[in-house]
Image (cartoon, rainbow, N blue to C red; front, side, top):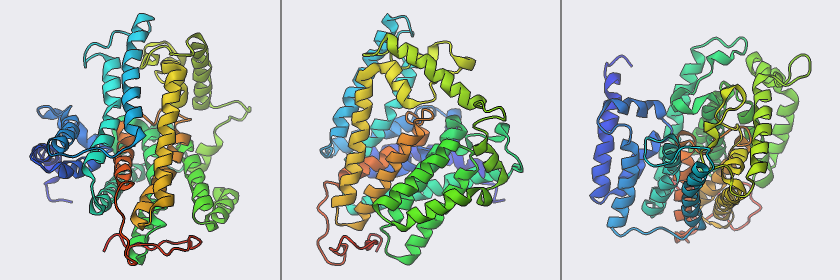
Length: 445
């Protein structure tokens, strides 16, 4: 902007974390929750915190401060099976690491500096964000504010991602030009997964907006996010968006099915040449899988053999990264395969239970809420979780705070929303005829 203050933004944001921590413990945990939401995906911003005291863990401290501040001031979690599933899954994963140690597959998870313990700790920050949301979101205004902040955060991610992408020449596809943008460590495919998921969230949410200006702004955000996703060159994200659009057509707006059908027949004439090259390079000229696709197949074959050796309990949580695999890769490139290999069928059942309850929570809010704000939240989350399931078939897009932290903040909000007493006035409720395609949106008056 040319003002010279940009250099101080990371420092100001870091200091703001400590203000939010103090405010959370002093009786305003909702403020701390609002403050953390934009920081969840913005890894490159958080990386600047490393220069300052406790910068590595300041976000974790903020999440814990929100939880403790809420509990100290009498807040209680709403009823949800998701909390119990997360608790049991987290405990099981910890003991799974010790089993992996006993099998000789990984070192003992004794302290935070041990790689496997750090992996487990970082993963469990996701349910802590979920718990924080469930504790502090207590009314309709808070739900509205969380969604608004999430939209602003997505807009900043879009801006940063597009600025990085548009600074490069894309006359042809070039793998070396891809990066994680504002998500940093999550990588280019992680950035693509994030954008795909939340383009679908706001696309679904926008279906329930009544005010024309609000709807147009929401769809502008969706269009910008899909455009940014296109330039991540992730084939999995393309599949997820198309699948999400089909689900939106099935459950809400049948016209979307026609739009998707037309797009599938004409996409090569619409998208840039570099995108077409990326999609068509799944196989080379001789009909064989290209390198990245072949890597996945080789990893899955190796993982299958490990699973057969320890099918019930697995080789130990976070143990796969310590083995020798194709091209020295440390991940299975499929979260579901990773869960089965590391934690066995038991861990697989936990994962399925987690996904089932997420879908059930979102669906229940979408189908049974009378307030369009809550309906939009439920439907948007339903589409997001469906996209996440697809994306995780092509890599681990589940355990990264940068990719899914925002999802769990919204899921905690949704769990709380299912327990609110909804307004009964004619102004706040959608028309009773469920056949109408558009529900009134009176949330933002």
